[in-house]
Image (tube, rainbow, N blue to C red; front, side, top):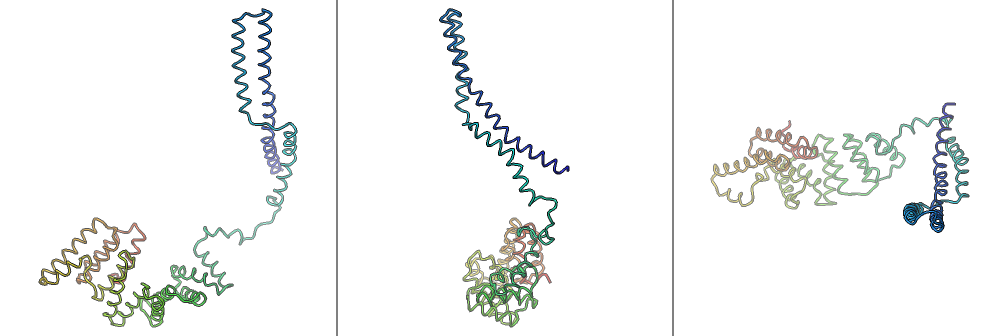
Length: 367
């Protein structure tokens, strides 16, 4: 009974909120007759003046006061909104008294009745897509693909997510299905080859190399395929072939290519690149120097690069070049120290730290 009493009070309050403006409107309409009263008072003053009941001065003062009130009342009437007719007000009052309770009861019985059964546990657990954790979303996509196994778009969406979650075997299966049902492409082939190499501990197996070869045929400029083909050549002992492939990549790459530091570091590892940070003119002049002078000049350039990075630690590419320079010069202790300084410098920037770690994988300094 307490619940119904509360609902009754809420309904009464809603009805009162509707009826109150109607009552005020009627009162304002009666108040609108003020102008007629003031006009009658002006006429009465004229009559009193004609019969000498009041003097001229008193009549003038009374006219001014009544005229001021008449103007104020006229302004209020002109600014007041149009008021509904009495019939409309009565209709609105009846609707408020009868219609509101019926409407409230009609909405409550199907939606808010205490006798309404519970929703199923599954429906209560399900949240909007944006609020669900990644694992739950992946499970939903997997359930969809079990019913629609030829949905290439679903496999393309699922595959990289599984790779990021570390589910390598499942990601490989997803990429194979994406290629089978969605058509061949350099990107999916290179991604599949990368996962196959990752599953083999970083070794470009024959199966992985076949995927990179296929990606290279589809797109000769695909950076991932070309990098791993060079890595395969290095692992086979063909360091010159790896260096030639990676040099060709750098020759075509834009200056801001995100994978440029990785390729430069790989060139330094196979002995196919110059120490970074030196301009072509400087390197040409260094070739004509005696070996001690050339070494001193190169070390001076590297030291200046190191000093610059101490002041501007956000330069990920600069850090990778510095580490690579130490590796090329054979100073592994300084290379490890520079890599440690670099990670500390970008520790607060997750994206820069990721780029640094990706580029540093090829140095072999973490083992």
